[in-house]
Image 1: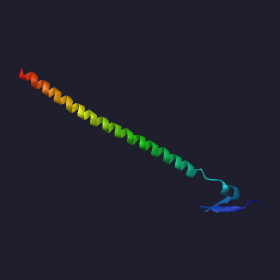
Image 2: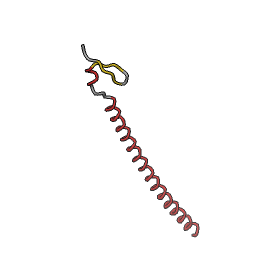
Image 3: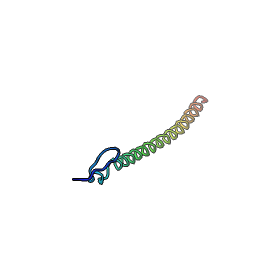
Image 4: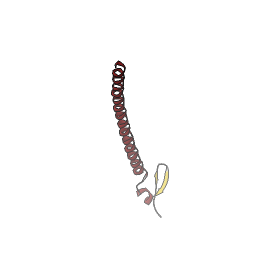
Length: 76
């Protein structure tokens, strides 16, 4: 007869007590995967914000050029 053991208020045989649980490993892998996705999303957001800033400056420069051109055209 196999010896019995108790872990987390559940009775296990001796062989079951020796098996490592995969839950902590799976949880760590899942957390690492989620962190990786979060980092990727943050980098994407930073790139989008930088592109918006560049677009804003380009729009401002273009608006100034249009205003200056219209002004010159009206002065003729």
